[in-house]
Length: 69
Image 1: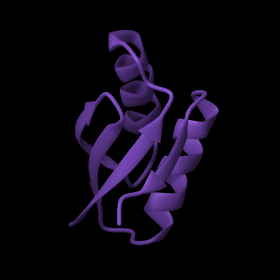
Image 2: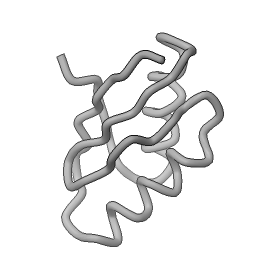
Image 3: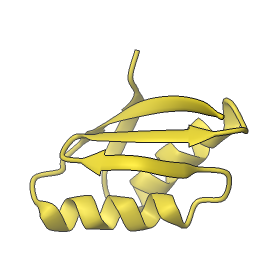
Image 4: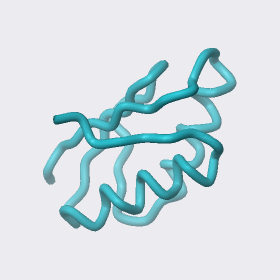
């Protein structure tokens, strides 16, 4: 499995962390390692498509995200 990190804008509390965690956990092909304010650490066997799916799930939850360089 390949690990990747996403930077997430707009998170400011525990409810934000919970909302993003739930969105990512329901995303096929994405395994959530850790979600904290402003960041998510994930892994997947489906690179790079899983990155796009994770970013889309985060957007649907109301936040913007981009892959950490």
